[in-house]
Length: 196
View 1: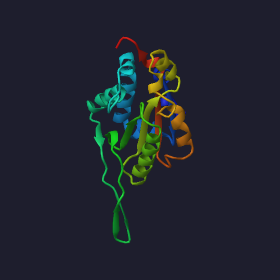
View 2: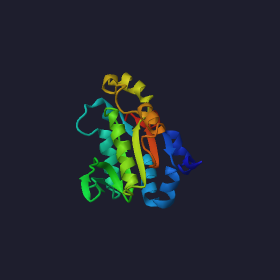
View 3: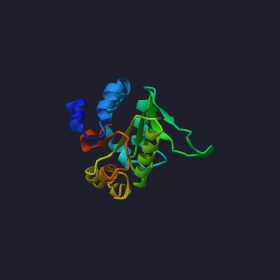
View 4: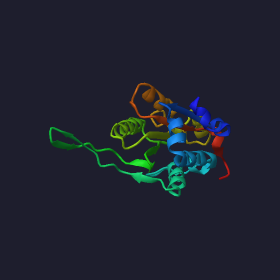
């Protein structure tokens, strides 16, 4: 099983799913990026203060993940894409990928509206079909974190129409990522920390 490529202690801390051999592709063809992802998962803590403080344009969770990966050479990336039919070129715009390195695209969906998953999966599909990426990775939150949010008085800020695992999995299982290998990582209560 390809998920066995993820060390046991990390599989115990996160909810992990893959499609189309994403782990094997990452570990074999992109070992540096794979090691970056494993190091990120090993290092990451979900700080209570990130939940209790108000939001903004970018969540503290996404910012922490971005900073960790940027220090390892990952960058936000916009792709300029177009389709040519019978000599007529039409732009085929994509949205920026949160973190990109060497054909691996990573999106962090912490507390956005759930249609952001459709945008991400469509982007992965298009970029994979155009041979611009080889694997897509999405980091989101596990459903059971709602209990912690409720206990901290922030439950209404993390509603059912926001991005979380049970909103993502049916989309992927229904084929929204098409042929793109996808790795999904769910942030769980096992990485929650009150003192960071």
